[in-house]
Length: 142
Image 1 (spheres, rainbow, N blue to C red):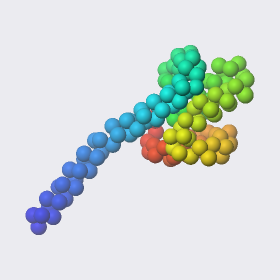
Image 2: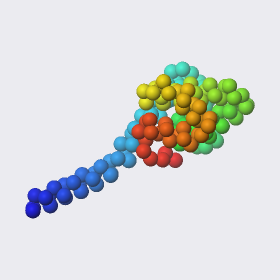
Image 3: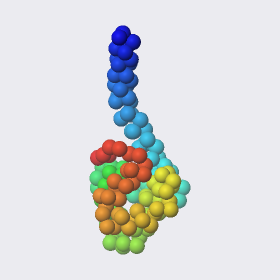
Image 4: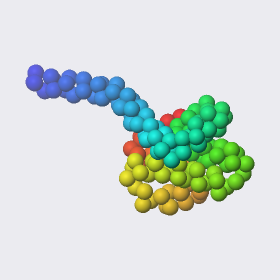
């Protein structure tokens, strides 16, 4: 009897530790994703990253672009569209190649790029949920 009580206490203690550490682990994983996106964009076009971060995303929302990508991808696209004065080709190119692609590379599913971009056009919320699923993000990032 004493052994089973000890085991139960130990299980409860482990559950408490996991509950306390899980948000930190998730936060670290998300920060790693943000760093990956930043690094990817920076490697392709450093000036573009700085401009988008400072004059598009932070100025309008107080958030970094890579944060918007995971929390509100539709808003990120709309901000890009506004930045490019309504030029859909430029906004789409930037959204696709500088934001979505590094996430798909990280998730090792670049082969699903077309499918996911079509999903974004049809249903941005479903796109966001699928990106979270692919990246194993189990909480809302807002």
